[in-house]
Image (cartoon, rainbow, N blue to C red; front, side, top):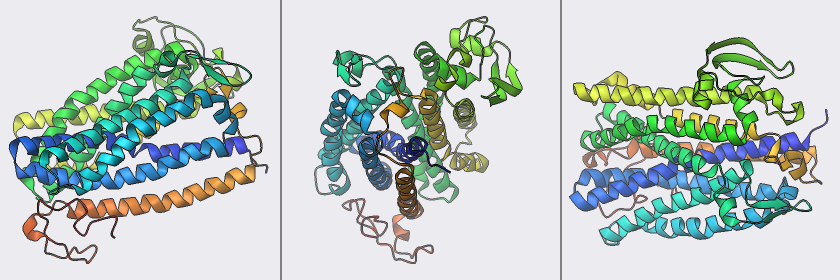
Length: 471
């Protein structure tokens, strides 16, 4: 069987990007939460806020490190697997990635050191400022990266001359038509991810009666945040979908499993798309609802997948079901947030064990939703690398062979498996040991058989035995 370098290169990049995406989507939200905790401690001097900030800074450090390691690899793949694309888009993407490094990564790296190692060594105001700068840096970084990614979907401010993109308007290219919606969608997704992780871990601690004062505060804050953001994300998603319908109608048609252009389009809850036959099997839907959502009209016309030539159609089955996974988890998030509001009114938010267990089980859900959404976004653009201007095949490295692509793909999978295992191992240690009451820190952890030292306010996040760097 002949190995197709295009298919393998796409699988490789999809794997690396998917692995990387779960880290920044968490750290962006978590960095802002840590800055808030530092601000609350600075203002109130309540040690509960300090304990929370110390614990979540440990988590942030491990996840941030994994994100940096996995993110570096992506830039190398532009040259190894997609050299034609790199050369063609260098006038735009080269400066964009450089801006991200200069304005964001350096900022994060500089102040991250103060945040991690400055506790008790610099004034509290300086420590708070460092936390704020790290949070700001994560948003600046996401600005440049999402602008560049959005440009691939809705290219603007450029012209393609002799297979090379030339920038005609930097403002139009950076603030391309889909960027505002994509940026808001990912920003809210980051806060939702951070919120559900913090809420889930706080619930896990409360189930074990670990530092109830601090974790009740953390859980309450997160549930208020989720109550506001989960429905907000649905509204932003609606605007994003309308924008996508305008600029990438075939992608939206694939998301809806809609083959022929027509009005009164039902919202399909279940179907098995058959791309070869250009139809669906076993359809189950709600009449007219897709037209209402996408056009805000009962009989609104929605373009069909068949409007595009077969070779220009995305993989419908993947896009269709990826979208439903994302939306389904989004609805589940709203339900959990509303359940929290009901229990809060009944005064049962902290002692309803079933609800606390449910919050703990929700920890992986936002990551799955982000990955599903990312798959929908990127697969739905296929076969275009730069939508309507350059295909994946045109951007591939000409000298790349199937065996070469397979070898590097296997290498990435193996190395990333080790990185992921190590990261989860240390995160598990941090979570299991990080919020033990101070009087219990002289005990021996039964899972790792290592003594634990008491932690004073002057300790940095890496001064105890859950230090992932020293371990």
